[in-house]
Length: 105
Image 1 (spheres, rainbow, N blue to C red):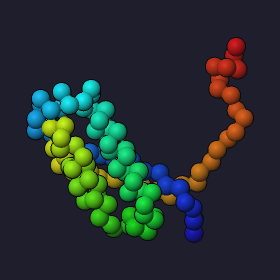
Image 2: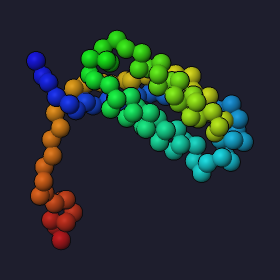
Image 3: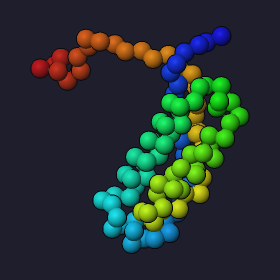
């Protein structure tokens, strides 16, 4: 049995534009807003629940409801949010390595 506190996940957001004026005028780039808000929502759900929660939970419904609320003012209608990938993982960090570009100089 693998026990850890780190997870890897990905998500898919299905949306449409209900109000093109709001999508283009209320933000610099509506696609960036969708990506940023989606990442924040997924991070919130993942960090406030344990791994067991995601084995048959309503995380997709909660994410959909949250993003519908957060993107409505930008003219974006979120149809569905789904976690596409979700797995336990080990968190590894390697300290003291320089980037390949700096080694060549």
